[in-house]
Length: 546
Image 1 (cartoon, rainbow, N blue to C red):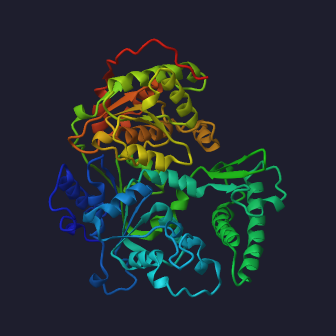
Image 2 (cartoon, rainbow, N blue to C red):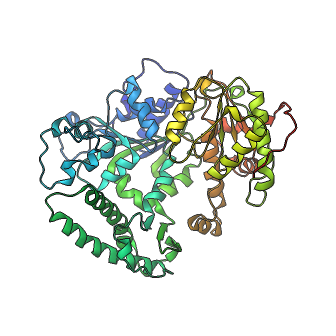
Image 3 (cartoon, helix red, strand yellow):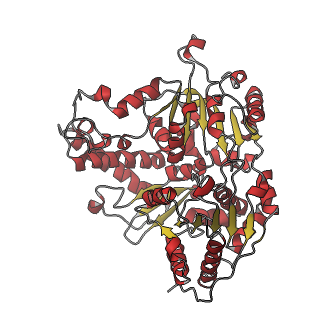
C-alpha cells in the first residue's frame, strides 16, 4: 500500500467539510503501520469519496515484480442502497461493480425473464452458452476480477471467499462497517428447518438439548446431502426446482461445515446456543461469531479501512471483529452539519416495554398527530420498530382524523411503497418498520421524524440473553445507540439541510444516559441540546388500539 498518494487518488476536484483533514489522518494512520484503520465518519463526510482515495493507494501489478504480492482493492458495503449510490456517482466510475447472479436476467431469447442464477448455463451440465461473453453478469464479474477496484455487497464478498474467483488484494475498504457485527452473527448462525433443508420431511429430527446433539444432526445432514448432490450431478439437465435445491444444499453444507469443523466436544458449550422450535426446527448461534470473519474478510486483504458513523468504541469493536486493537488505528472525522439544524425534541409519552406499551401507544399516536399538525406542510417519517406498532399507530392516527396523510408498507412491498412515497409531492407521512439505516431523505423528502421505540435487541433471543446473563450490558446499550445515531441521520444529509427528530419512547433517553460515554462528540452535542417541543393542540378524541 502507498498511503502517501491518498490525496492524488481523491476523485473530487476539491474538498468540502473535513475531507482534507480526514485524508491526512487516514494517511498518517496507515503510515504508522496500522493494518486496520477504523474511520468514524458522520453523515456528510463523503465516505464514498474517502473510500475511493484509500482504495487508490493499493499496490498495482506494474509496481511489483512478485506475482504473489497482493495488488488492487476491494470495496464492499452491507447496504445494497449504498452500492446503488456508488453506481450512480460519476466520481466513482472506476469502481467495477458486480452483484449476485439473481440480480441479472438471462439474455438468451426465450429466457429473458429468468435470473442468471436459474439460467440454462446453471441448470444444464456442460452447457456452453454462446451469449456468455455478452451476459451482463459475466461481463460485470470479469470487469471486477480484472479491475483495480472491485465493488460488491458484503453478502457477495463473503460468498466468494471460498471460491477462486477473487484473489487476495492489497487493500479492502468496507463502508457502513458497523454492519459487520450483524453480518458476522448472521453468517455464523445455522438454521435447520423446512425452509433451509430440502429433505426435511424425510428426516427424523430428535429433541435437541446440547450442542453435541446438534452437531450430530449436522454431520448426518452432511452425509445425506453428499448423496443427493451426487445424484443431481449425474443428471444432464436440471429442472428449475432441482437447480434451486442444489443451490440450497450448497448453502446448507457451507453453513453446517463450519460447525462440524469448529466444534470441539470438550470445549465450553457457551461458545454456542441452541434453540429448537415446536416443529423440530433447530437454530444454532455462535456467541463469538468473529471467527467466521477470518476467512471471509481478514484473509482477503493486507490493509483494511472500515468506515462508519457508528464505530463507537475502538477496543470493543475490534474484539467483536476478531481484530487485535494494537493492530488498529482510530480516526474520528468531525461533523460539519450545524447542530441547530438537527434538533432533538423530547415528546416522550412513557416506556414502550411489553408491560407499559398498551398504555403508552395511544399517547404516542396522539403525539404523532400533533407533530403532523405542527408540520402540516412537510413530509415526515415515523420509525415504528415493528409491524404490530405500525398497525396500532396508524389506527390511532386515523381515529384522530389524520389518516389522509398516512402511508405505510408491508414486508412484501416495503421497497416499492417507500419509493412511491419518496416520489410523492404532497405532505404524506411514512410509517416505516426497520428503516433506521441507509435512507437518504435529503431536503423536502422528509423534514421531520419520530422515533417510537428504543431499538433494543430482543432480550428473548437466546444469544442476546446469554450475553446479558454474562453482564454485557455495555454491548446491549451500544447496539441500541448505534441504531439511534443511524436513525437520527436519515433526514439531515447536507450542511444546509434541516430536520427535526422527536423522541416518543422515554427508554430512548435511558439509552442516551447509559451510553453517553461512547457517543461521538457531535452526537453528544446534539443530545445535550435536546428540548421539549411546543406541539399544537388537536381536537379532543380517543386514540384506540382496538
